[in-house]
Structures are given as C-alpha cells and as structure tokens.
Image (cartoon, rainbow, N blue to C red; front, side, top):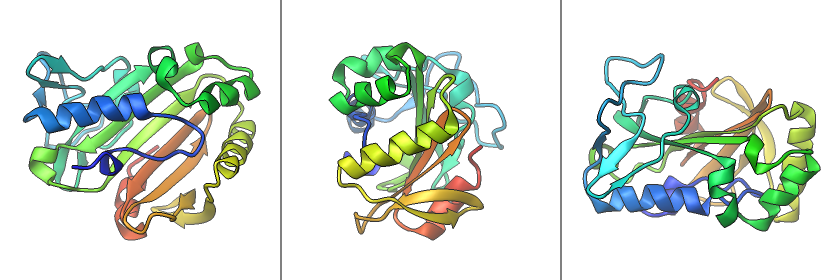
Length: 207
C-alpha cells in the first residue's frame, strides 16, 4: 500500500504525521482490534475496530465519537480508524495549517481529526479512505472560503459537483485517486477514491 493510497491531499493541511502513523501500522503486520475496542456507533454486522494495534505500536484513538461518524466498512473490509487532536500533530503540520487556523480565529486546541481506511490485510491495495477534520466553533461559510483560497494558493483546483448525494468539491488532478470534500457545520468531511462511482458509495455513508 502506498502512502498516496492511504492519505488525502486537502490542499492546505499537512496531515503527513497522521498518514505516517497509519502507513507504519499498515506496513508492519496484520492489524487487530485494540483490547476493549468496540464497533463504532451505527455499524453493521461486521465489527470495526476503533483503533488498531500492531506489535509494539498502536494507532491513536482519542475521539471515538468522531470515529463513529466514519464508515465501518470500505472495499468490503472492516475499517481501521484513528483520531487525533490538533495539538498532538500541529508540530509536524504544514505551516499553512497554522495560517488557516489563524484566519479562522482558532488554534490547534480547537481541532479534532478522524481518519478511516480499509484493513489492508483484507482489502488489498484499495485506494479509498474517508475522514473528518473538525474545527470546533468555526463558521461553515468562512471555513469553505478559507479552505478553497488556501487550496488555490497551493495550486490545487477543486471543482463543484454532486457525488453520493452530497454537494462536494473535487480534486481530480491525480488520475488514480480523486479527492472530495464538503463542509458541514464546523467540519470538513472528505473522501478519496479512484472514481466518482466508488466515491459515491463512501460519501453516501458520511454525515
């Protein structure tokens, strides 16, 4: 599994630290449910771990409520989920991350992030992921404006569309993996998939 296939390019946010955590866990060995982990709220018949453990390493799972909003299954495989607060990964984030928060009148302490990928031992090289980036109390209109402006400054072009019943913005610059996002309240909700049809099955399950 490549780092591209498990990360989402959001234009202005450097999620390298989070992606590296997931990549390390996925490439080390089979992921299993953490002791005491339960299926996320609203799940189906397949129990999905809210965090994952590999020998000597465990993915952070600091916001199970946020993880519970993400799909329990992707590519017919249970998902591996992880969540972090902004303060825990801000030090490794792209400098634009801080600039965006400043523009919104927020700090890293206002940020929560959750991310889900299909278990690579079950789904293979499935180029699909989903996540939620929440800036507590942010205005949705301002969040969208700042996001698009920062993406444009990064020479990332998002075009509006409707996929999976959601009004989204799409970055289709990579022929193998499209990135989608929409704003709901104070959150940026996003997904990555190889095409619109696949993305629709993910986006339709998101809040």
